[in-house]
Length: 427
Image 1: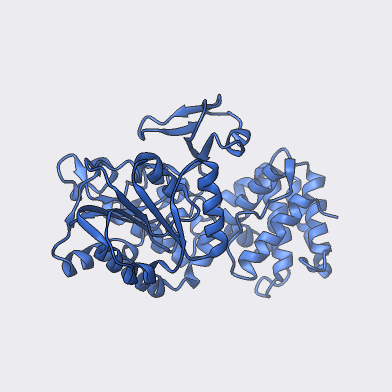
Image 2: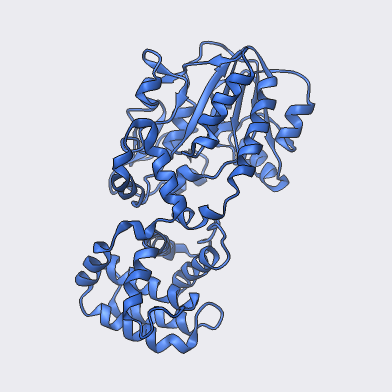
């Protein structure tokens, strides 16, 4: 019987390629010491799915005949271990994959012999296997959605020819960034010189799980931390985080402006409850409102000095963190998302106090989710104007306003962090 780690990986792959579902945040819950292996293996299978399938196809008796997903998953799991996980023994990689193929729930038992034969052949020379897989074109691991995202990320910085360079960077697992909340910073975390308060994990340092579980700090991407390091000389008294869960940015706002009244909106009751608990555990106060943010913004009177709208989006800037996205993005309803973003943004602009600051953000590189909204809003609301609150280096060179920029979109080739678009406006 396959180990829990391989079973979890197989179920996650079935969710992506069989059901078109994102990998849940808790997909590896309960694995304990096996979680590291499972995470590495799933990442390899997702990041190299196209090449793994292309490697197998010419070795089949009938290459044009469809192969059941259970067989493809078992082969991908086995080949990924043989090619890129040298600590896994040959027999373990082969036998566990055969066990996945034999599992009636997630495999295809008639193909046990096929899986066994192909993997035993590959195991005879693991270096040659890795070389053969890596020699296949990297574009095999990219869907049309991924190609669109790469082009969108590179266009503002005039880097259209650097697709392969960016894809190579995004194909490596990301490095976590952290923020201290209380007490001492554990050994192994070092200051990030580019972002005030941001912490990075030193090379070969252990993941600070105990520190995080004790509430001493939190994981927060570099882009999110840089976004909240805006330069603004006002002291706000009323702040709104319009799409607040899971609470990282709400936490940042509360820590930066401790004397302000803070509202946090979240539509899903379960996520809202988790947000409340998170803020309580961190000793922070906010009025958490369970509501549809667009409706609340349109119907609730009053204005805010500082308004953050981290809108629902495609997540296309998180390809590195979520390697399943290249395979799911083509099914996204981008026009629906863009319409929701427009509605939220227009409603948020109406709630902005004179002299206040509105920050709109999406973890996406697609222009229809960022740049297009900025142009449309400035045309529709002549009382709004750009607010240059970030260092110019965090935007495209052509959009710099002296040493500042009002449009946050770092160079994707140089910036280590999620792909973000954000713009700041004032009235």
